[in-house]
Every structure is written in structure tokens, then in C-alpha cells.
Amino acid sequence: MRRPTHGPLPAAVSADDLVILFDAECVVCSGWVHFILRNDPKANLRIGAVQTETGRALLSYAGLNPDDVDTMLFVERGVPYSQSSAFLRAVRYLRFPWPLLTVGRVIPVFLRNWLYDRVAKNRYRLFGKKELCLIPSPAERARFLPD
Image (cartoon, rainbow, N blue to C red):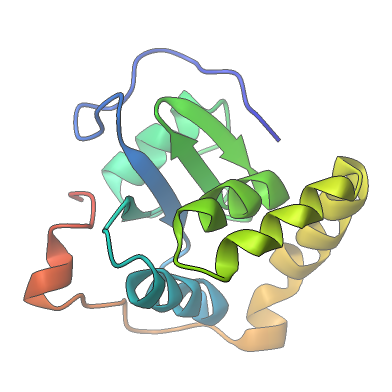
């Protein structure tokens, strides 16, 4: 869902950026980041961990608790989206056929977010937790937000 903004964007994020935040300790979230890196050849999306200072500032910007890492956040040119809406907006920037997933918008938001929340709340139990964080290659490093 689209979120109201609270204050200015963090300094590390410009008004034109497309930023997706992920939980760096979550196996499925890290898999999502690898998926983005493989399927975003134009490097449209910038990536940041919710555990970093910039990630926490973006959560606050979106009116979310910076200590709550149970939601995905996508900031599209200054407009924050969370939960299933974040996912559906982000896939629009990936190579074909992934933008076709946006047909999921026909499902009512309350149903999409209910399912999203069930997975998010149980992701460590379902998929595990990582002890080590994702280490991007030198070529990928420029796509990541600073800590």
C-alpha cells in the first residue's frame, strides 16, 4: 500500500531513485535481492538493508517503525510503498516476463497483504535466518545504499 511520508528523504536517496529495502538476515529476502540483481540489467533499482542507518531512515520516512523488519519497502521517486504493493511496483522495473506479475493488482489489497503478512511473520521459521550478510560484488556495490 502507498504510505504517507514523514519528513525529508534521507540524504543517501535522491527524489528520482527507485529503492527497495530488504531484511539482510532473511534467506528469502536475500534471495529476492539476488533475483533483482539478475533481472534488472538496466540497474533501475537501488538496494538497501533495513538494518542500516539509511534503511532505518527510509522506514521512518514511510511512517514505519525502524525496528520492525517484517515488511518490504519500495520507495519509487520519493513515494513509499509497503507489503505486497512494494513487490508489485518493484517487478515493473525487471526484465520480461516479471512485469506480468503486476496483474496481481486485481486481487484486493487486504487479501494480498494478509498473505504477505503471513509469510513475512513466519519467514525465519519457513526459510531460515542468515548469520552472514549479503556481500555484493564490486560491480554490484554501486547499486547498494550506504550503511
